[in-house]
Length: 121
Image 1: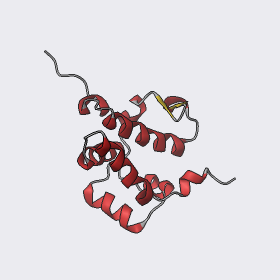
Image 2: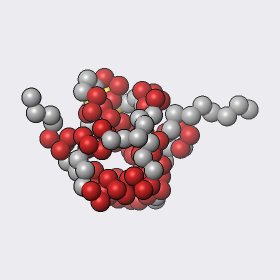
Image 3: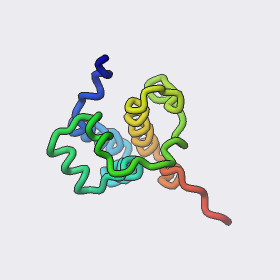
Image 4: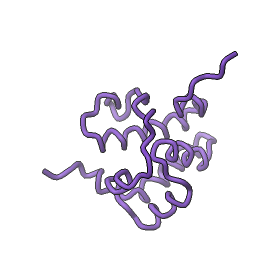
């Protein structure tokens, strides 16, 4: 059974769209890189290689150095679906990434986006 067509979409084709989205809301490429790194474990060189090699999303996530164990804490709606209820693991990872970028664009605090506990007062 063939996977969803987005699985074959290159990371290089969606990455600039993420950057454009956050820059329109006066946020930065560095913030996009930070949330993708948090989710996947890719460093800057790894992201650049994935873009240069034109890897598809399936390969991008299969080759991810280390998916963040706290990614299961990502909840909410993206494209009309609750990310925590998506059955396909690859589709869920893609939607996690979408959700994180949306949160950056909305101006959410990075500590909240990265699911870090609030500092004690």
